Length: 184
Image (cartoon, rainbow, N blue to C red):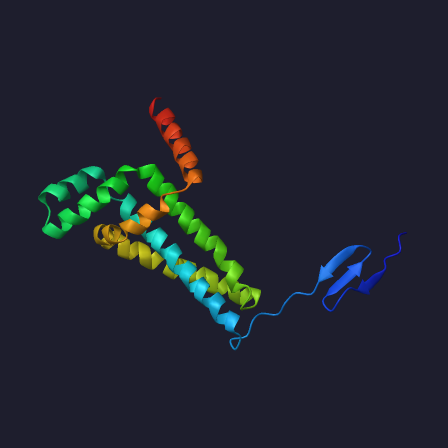
C-alpha cells in the first residue's frame, strides 16, 4: 500500500503525492467591482441569446415569395423592410447556422459568468428562468409578430455575424444533406 504524503504548497494549494488541489474561490460579493462586471456580461449574454432566438423564429418563418410580394405590393415601410431582408432569407442555411451558433454560444457562456457570483443552485434557477423567459419566449413572441420590422432593423448585425469559416462548412453539409434527401 502506497503512502500518501500531503503538504501545503503556498496559501491555497495542497500537494498530495504529486496531485495538486486548489481551494475553490468563494462567490463574489455585490460590493466587489468584478461582481457587477460578471452580472453585466451575463445580462448581455441573455440579451444576445434572446436576440438570436427571436431572429431565428422571425426571419426563418418568412418565405421568399411572401417577401417579394410585400416588396412589390406592401406599404412603403413593408417594401423597405422586405427589400432589406430578402438577401438574408435567400441565404437560408447560412442564416440558420449563424443564428443557432450565436444562440448556443451565448447560452453556453452564461454559466461561466453566473457561477462566479452565486452558488450553484441559484445559478441553475436563474439561468433556466432567464433563458426560458428572456432568451426564448419573449423574443420569439415579439419576432413572430414583428419579424419583418425587427429583422430589417437588426439586419446589419446579422450580416456582421454571418462571417465565420466554420459556419460555411456547416452550411455546405446542410446543403449537401438537403439536396441528397430531395433527390430520393
